[in-house]
Image (cartoon, rainbow, N blue to C red; front, side):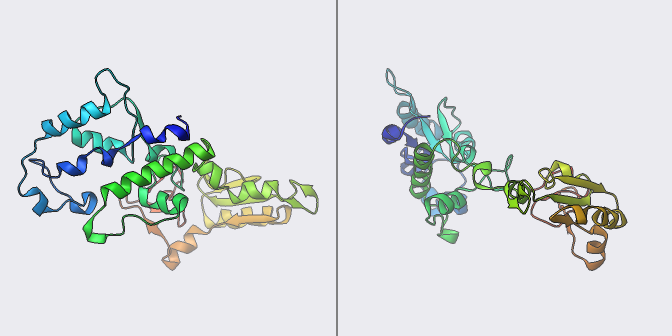
Length: 260
């Protein structure tokens, strides 16, 4: 990764003069994302090939150094421009989504969390491309200043079970024991760091598992999914129509498939 002194040489995607090419023939304006209005496109005269001819010498000047392209979800921009570029830094990849991979964090969320400012607040007015570009460079600058682990899921979030393992109870470090008793196979997700994990197929098994683990653990988590069904407290996955475990981890009922 480059050092902070060379950040001035980086090219944010939306500062490459793309705002000068609002009137591109055959382009859908998608105002909510681009900030470009239908009126701005109504007198389109610039072709895609002309835009490419303007950008390519900036990205890869003949006889000069190849520029580093900085942006957020760059594959979308490059596909729209129908070009490839060998040196890219994508803030959707170098920062983590709070729920981990393979989910990607949104630029507005990243900017609010790490840069402590709001962007993309124009509502129906769409995004400001310069604002988005500056946010990407600021996020990269923070990454360079704070190290490769900055903004990654593991660096900023810790399972409650991991935290309890590090805690010092009456018996000293490591004496706070935890257990998870849940439907399916909780080992693959939320119970992965617990001292004891009990997979169950029914609420009856959950109750039995709790009765066997509570006395030996300082913290025990159990979930009665059958009771949740009766009370109408279940969510459903719209894509596969399976029941979802009610909670932040977004698991199907068998706890094997992750949903956004």
